[in-house]
Length: 261
Image 1: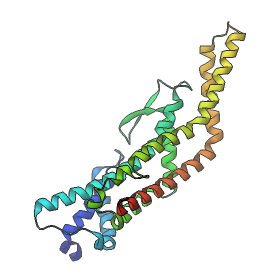
Image 2 (image 1 turned 90 degrees about the horizontal axis):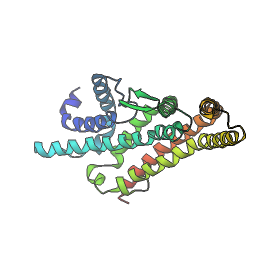
Image 3 (image 1 turned 45 degrees about the vertical axis):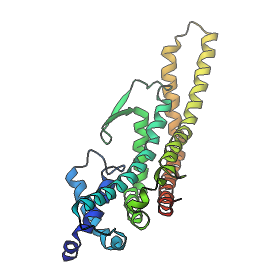
Image 4 (image 1 turned 180 degrees about the vertical axis):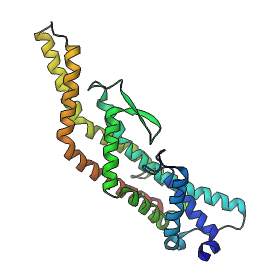
């Protein structure tokens, strides 16, 4: 305990970065987790990694105002890393949004207690599936591992070099990849629903007396759920690979920030 008291100022710098991450990152930022529990987790994790990252902690300024700016900068680094993870996980809600209307669930939304917002029903299903895969891969530990490695690679002065935005693995690239991955997840269902719509159109021409509005919705919903069920094993493997790539890209982003290129 004396070790932490003597190095209290540096300890709080580590705590600041950890708190910025855990209050933003997926899973840890859930509204169902009490702030007291989140702060306690921040303290415990900080105490565990503090001796390991001590040599990478920036020098403590003598002036309180300068120290406050350094602490804020450390917190912003944690927020930036957590924000990248949140954006990467938004791909599942986006994928559900792409085909929710086509399958007949355009007017149905559910309240997400983690994000405190209304989301498409199928998007929420894909998001919960992704969270379960994330937990099976020990994702929370991987997030903490990333923040641990960030001390070896990123200081606040390096963070200001703009690579967080302009890097090939930066925030712009993450946004672009989010749309591509969302389309890849939703494309099989979108293509199948297109075929269903074409079939319904042909039936409408062949039998004009049929009420396609009443027949088409149950068929679209049934076909979509059956396709999701059939594709579920492949979808789990895809999500697992995407999560692995997400953490690799985050590592390469930190390397780019460290190298300034």
